[in-house]
Length: 269
Image (cartoon, rainbow, N blue to C red):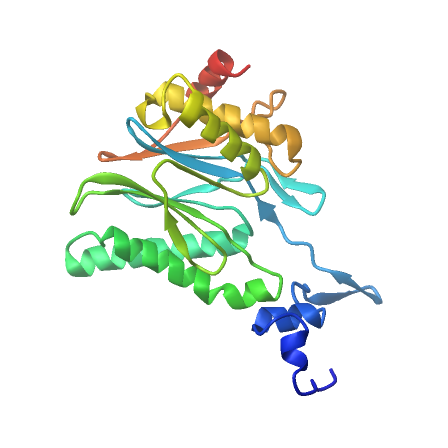
């Protein structure tokens, strides 16, 4: 690459490093691997879509089951809602390999703290731990690989007992939300459904009982699947339903598939 002339940096995309890479055509380039005498771009496996919202019984976290690589469906039974400890859930959108490794690191970190300090890590500590993992991964994101945009839901049992919900960007910035969050390629449709229900539905999301909350989550994911091919939604023929888990003061509850199927039949199909 030719050296930059004086003043060229500021005039070719801004005075930040990503702007420089973008101006030189180097931002987001995936690494190339040799294949039978040619070079081809690596296609990453991606997992979308996830959502979470507070309801009467705590925080509901749900995700569809589809994982894709480009225009190929890699797997239709991926688990995108991961249990980190007794009161914490991490839902993943992005590259599963990176996200699952982050989840394992978080799980061990929380467990180590609990065993050495004889108490649960604070919610702020948990939130910052995930933020640091995302920041440490940002070098790979800049190379176009390994992006993860998670949702973190937990129940604060130490100081002020309450459900807490956060979403993150790829650089590790965390944002606490009062009502709902959604990320992934199908998230625009999901956010539209949740906004509508929270403002003009029969009840706000926070006042829904468990069955009503599950039905809203299923409707949102099924709607997203209509316009986003990377979102699996509900596979009616294969009887594949989203993962739905709830975190509350009593811990984490994973809803059985038969109950999700019954609620889907009752409130969606």
